[in-house]
Image (cartoon, rainbow, N blue to C red; front, side):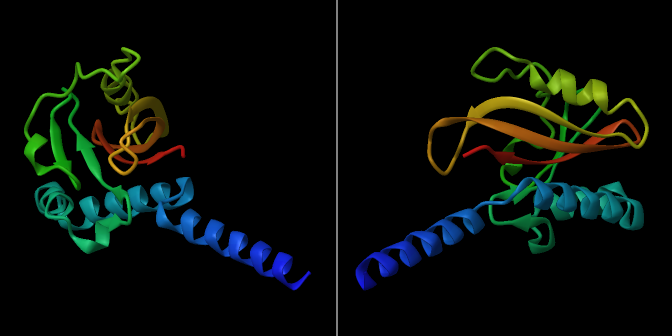
Length: 150
């Protein structure tokens, strides 16, 4: 009986550790709100530089900020600074969905909070997984953070 209880406790603790290893939807949404506040208080130029410089205030485990212009250009990216300045409007997920079109279109609505679902390669597991990007529009710019659905 004691062995069974020990095993059950181990499984429960392992699940808790695994669950906290990755960001949750609520945490991604909170990070976006924090990023929007930073843009409004510091200005876009400084905020975008902070997001791209991997400022610890805007990275939480696998959560980071991405900012996309109304034309689909990446203005900030907390995980891949090599794509900042690149036009990503027509990038498609592995099912052929041009998800950035949806992101940009929804950002046209002022002060809009929204999500976009697509499939993408998870850099942790190297598997294609469903991903949800949580965004808010700021002057027709999309400020986003996303989670993989593991």
